[in-house]
Amino acid sequence: MSDIDHSSEPILEFAENLILQKTDTYCSELQRRILSTALQGERKTYDQLADECGYSPKYVKQDVAPKLWHLLSQALDKKVSKSNVRIILTQEMRNTTQTSSAHNPSSNASIEAPPPPEPTVPTGKVKILLVDDQPQNLRLLTDVLEEQGYEVLQALNGNVALQAVSLDQPQLILLDIQMPEMDGYTVCQKLKADPSTQDIPVVFVSALDESWDKVKAFSVGGVDYITKPFKVVEVLARVQNQLKIQQLQQALKTQNAQLHQANLELQRLAALDDVTQVANRRRFDAYLLTSWHEAIQDQHSLTLMLCQLDHFNFYGSGGNSQKGDQYLYRIAQTIKQTVHGPNDLVCRYGTFTFAIVLPQQTSAQAEAIAQELSKQVKEGEETFSFSIGLASIQPTSDIGIEAFIEAGDRNLQQARNNGGSCVFT
Image (tube, rainbow, N blue to C red; front, side, top):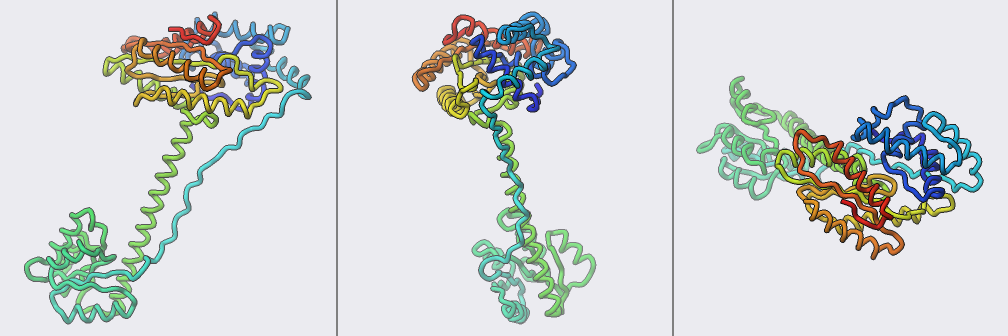
């Protein structure tokens, strides 16, 4: 079901309020869609609209549309049809401009993606672990690195190196290959096999200078290779390069995490109605379809509850739309507190209408929920009541979801025709 084009919203809102004031009747969501299409000048047949909205063509052509044009004709005291409705309503709006309250469009909030974080120098000294079975090599590298402000840890063999890493993780490891008991390749493999240490960059420092040695060093997870005898300038350059790469990788992880959170927040907001903070119509359409297919697969029941507020007159001429929004928010939260099954979904279905999807709920269970809901709304908002239409079914592959939605809509209209403040199943 496509969304209504907001360019026609002012006229559409004017028409709804006019019908409510003159006939004390609320437009159904289907009537609202028919009217919006006519106001936008779209050349769509009732058959096309019925298909898009999930209703039968007969129901739209013989029931919903004729009732809409009759209500408008009654409200305007002149013949209104699909072809002339925009002209008549536009003229009527001009005539009542002085007394109509100004429309205050809500601002569209947006979430900006977080800017890429700049690579930062780690707080405190950078720890570098040196692993070599030759003490003179450890002393030389330690002196060189400590002069540059690094904190140096030392290990004379692979086992000591693994223990040191488990106790105090360094930002970088300089690792010799040829060592007794456990060579550098094995040490690196063990580090990379442990999720807690696999991201620590390992630079091999070795007298082995064959291509095969270097290939193996990279294959087990090394990020660089320094050949002995090494030059101090080269060691420092390679160390600084790996630390810079590590900082950039960490910054990228941070940015990705922020983007992921921003994306989750955007998805959450896209599924929420701004005024009531319950799920919106788009979320309803998707969830009902998913619940329908799950009910077919698992062979369980599914119930749809459509609730429309009776005598909610805040959005008409001279009304207080801000106060109306506050009432709608409180009512929506009351519904959420009353309907709190783990798989139940409360949605704002239309201007004054809420839809509740109740997977695995039978008609009897849903009717008990509906009665409790009516009670809670009356207690919380003394001047308002609900007309509620219920439709329950155990879906099968040969039944269309359109008929299910249509049944809920028919039962809601019947509850309203019975005077409102009641449940019709």
